[in-house]
Image 1 (tube, rainbow, N blue to C red):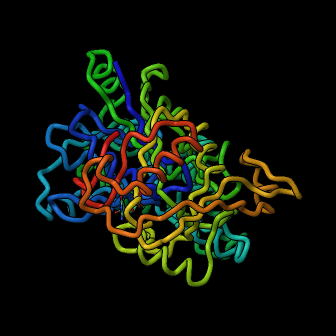
Image 2 (tube, rainbow, N blue to C red):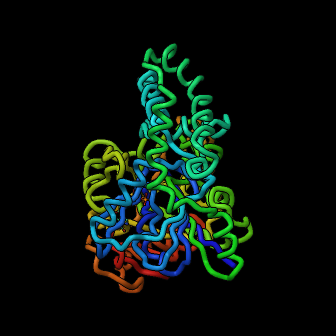
Length: 427
Ligand code: GDP
């Protein structure tokens, strides 16, 4: 009985999609358990290049059951579009089950997200404006609509539930944002029109996962964003609205907490961050431009928004903390190949906060004042993309990996040296 979690140790975009795609064939189910289509996982494999937003990264692996769990913010338009695009590109129709308990991101969530970011102006949170915060707020307010309500209970009940939710939204829309009110009937029509298309995918995924695990088969749960975007443990308020931690998979997917026994924290060999908030090792000027241009598979730009990612050196303080709150049992280190242009590679070993050096990751109010303490490691100055064994890496690259392992205190088991599926080595 075992569940493996693939989660982010940092701010997101660590390369979780690639690692999940790589591992998927070893698992019966691959599960998304939190977040929505507000971030993307880039996957490059035999079918082409994909940016998955809502679909689990097991969709390319035949025989895998791909589950969208109750904790996910499910956007029906995005789901249908992503599914159709995948099949149009020649990927065999994947087996996908969406929890009947998952709730739906409605058009007004997106509208309210956008209006609020605009109202906040330069105090905005850098939201992707996909409706995620208003969606989770409605879940807490208990006025969200579940997928199960599209297929059972009848349209009268659904219309009443939507009318109840919309009443308060309309006051907000008109009085705070000076926008037009929502017509609850139009909203219900929009949802009901989607029901037939979604029906074949809607299922009781909790029982499916519990039975799969009880029968001895393995499940992979795939996190979105990273530890530092967790609303409780991250850089609040510059966080996302659902927990990004492996521990939350027991809730967002519906698996026994004690079944999650392998936690792979994915981290880049440098740092990258989309959105607002303190980012201690952030680079500027030429150093920033160079790392952004050479990073990722085609430069460091957001998979969903194409926003330029902020980039910086590897941050041991943030990553050790991220691995700690994830409960990491191992690390997958990605993008090692990217650093091949440097003769010396700076790494952050501590933060200078209020005149003292610390290696504890502080709360946001102190983090905002932190300056990085940097140490330089020798670079290898060559390409690593073709290397498939740890022993074949240049000694400086091996030492860089070992240095990170020592600094974080978690074994680095997987090393990624390029965006393609096969560009990987194991230790
Ligand atoms: P995720 O959301 O954690 O899956 O990460 P993203 O897909 O948003 O961002 C990771 C970026 O790094 C993507 O552009 C990947 O194609 C790319 N990538 C992943 N692993 C590697 C690697 O080892 N080397 C390089 N150069 N790019 C990588």
